[in-house]
Image (cartoon, rainbow over all chains, first blue to last red; front, side, top):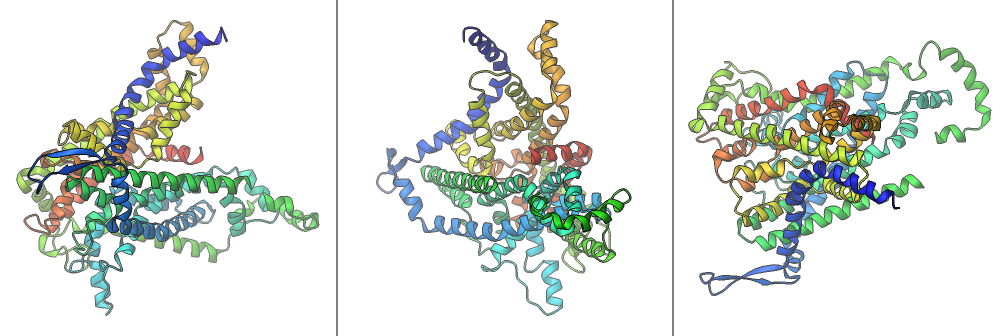
Length: 299
Length: 307
């Protein structure tokens, strides 16, 4: 103890100049805004008279939170994002796993070409990808709708019913390749001997892929699952860009869009409460996914 | 593995004999019938087409004259090759504001990328190599922040920056860009495995300062740092919500925000082919970055996935 303490202090002195610059900015960019929003979410601005008189900030308790849970637009936005996530994330990860297994199998020629081809959408900034798809979806301009019209099918990508699927398609298009590469990297890390041993036991091809490879890449799958859930919950760029081709898309389509609308209406305290609720929901979701998978690994 | 353990011994004599003969010559997994080979190639090609087609549309459309973008075959070149004129129009539109947007994006992404990489690798190095009190608490907090999505944070950041009057300035976008919790995470893992403790001890014995020793360690961390820079560069270049919230002044906006603003004009006064060409040109720096640093990010992705 007497020898350890000065050495730990010396380590702290050594580490401080390296850690502090980052830590200081981390506090400014992460902790302060988070704390400030939580505090702001408990206050409200009371405007006297017809809003012409002065405004004063009063403590509102849980008022903003009650408002969040009674806000039909906000609840609807959560539902939409939940719906998109429930259909899009499994489809995307299923395709990504499938493609990664194909890439990892000894079958394909031109593995490098396919890897790059799948990764290309990731190189396109999300909002630029959404911009491109907004042209591909645009009812009067779309070359795809044009093709369908020429074979007598009336295809629209921007009706209320089609919108979630159109948005899900942009997400799938943009992120499948990225997830494929992540899973593929994990597959490549499986020792050759493991697969050889499996093959000697008569387990090869698809059986080996499903029984041995998939369980071994479970950590990577879990990572992609959590990142995809987080990604879907913060949906913003795609629907905002889609608004230029879908006037029927409400400005509270996703929770973040709803919070941004509160900001632009100068309803700052309410926007703070909305983002706190959203952040908390995302935290709970990722913790749940991690715990569920930890249980399935230990079992 | 479980299959291997559970399989009863009775299968052994049958399975062993042929495999013992086969193994030296051909790997058992590489004997695939031509039919399944063709099927796999077809499936993979189909997906490659799905991923590449919209990009192909973007490239082709940027070469078409204004009247042609939405007539004829969307996925093939038009009558005249108007790429040069389109680029000229792009850089002349609205007093050449597109060049300004590109420059802004470069400033945010290159500057933010470099500063965040330096700060993150310093912090990650210290977390890996010094066992100071509170180390795990710092690392845990940073790790939690990796999971906090940036868009959710954008609104709190807006609230704080509008409180401090930093809104609608260069710094409102730049300061959030120089903090990379993921970078700290990656550089800690990388430093722990790539910088030997002996290097630190030897440096101290020779009387070198901690900064000198770090400067030597940085060379060993270079692949991780390039990865962090690339990821941060792409994240900043791609960012849309934060700058669109923070910046009302169009001359401060990055190219993503500017282009979506143009798209919303619905083709007038900025033509569709100008928006499409602008989208294509805005992708070029990202693609160039990926191509030039390719060997680094593919390795970095692998580290991120395995650890």
